[in-house]
Length: 289
Image (cartoon, rainbow, N blue to C red; front, top):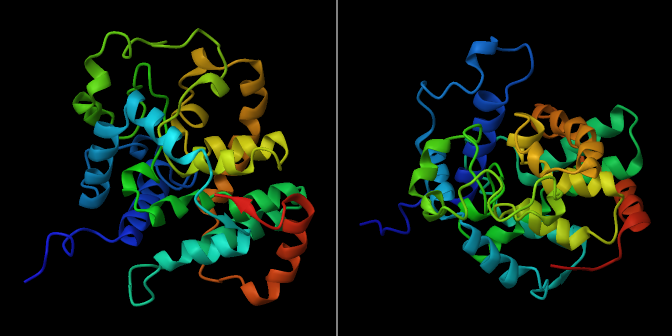
C-alpha cells in the first residue's frame, strides 16, 4: 500500500509541469498561436499545475514572505561553488522518468548557449547559466509552491493578470483592507526594490548574487518570473524610473528562458572550461547559500 507521501508528485514532476504550462499555454512562442489562445484557461490544464497554483496563491501572504526572508536570507546554510550548486540542483532529476525531457543543467546550458550564439555580453551568458540556481531551495525541504511559479508583489492588490488569479480568494491577504488595496503597504512609484515579492527561487538567488553581477543581470534573475510586470504590463504604479530602465533587459532575457529548448543538447564536458573561466571572472570560488 502506498503512503500519502508516495502519492505526492515528485519535485521534478511539478517543476516540469509548471515550465511546460508556462511555455506552451500561458506564454507561447510569439505568432505560434492565435492571439485569442493566449492565457486561455477554459481549456483543461495539468492537474498538478492547477493544484500548484492553488497552494501558491493561498499561502503566499505578506507574513509568509517576511517569514521566509528571515529564514533564508541570512544565507548561512552552506558555502557552495556554482558547480556544486549545479550538481546539488541536479539531484532532483530522475533519469528513469520518461516525461522529463531536460534536466535542470540542460535547461540552463541551452539558455546560456542561445544567448552566447546571439553575441550578447558575457555577463548575459553567465546569467543564462545560473538564473535558476535558486531552485536549490527545494532541496532544503521547501514546498514547490514556495520555489517556482510566477512571482508577484505581496502586501497589495493581487492583479487579475496573474495566472489562476481566481485562487487568490483563498489567500488571507485578499480580505485584509490594509493589504488588498492597489498600493497596500507601499507608496506610489516606490520602486520594486522596496516591494516584497512572493517567495521563490528568483528572490533567493538575487540575494546570493547581488554583490557580484551587473545591475541588468540582477534584474533578470530577480524578476524573470514576474510575468504580470514584464509580459502583462501590470504594477507600473509600484515602479520607479530605474525599474522602467531595467525592464527592457528583463524582456530581452525572457525569450531565451522560455524558448531555448532543443532536442540537441549541449555537451557539458566540452563547455565546462569556457564556463569555468566565465564564472571565475565574475564570481568568487564559493558563495553563501
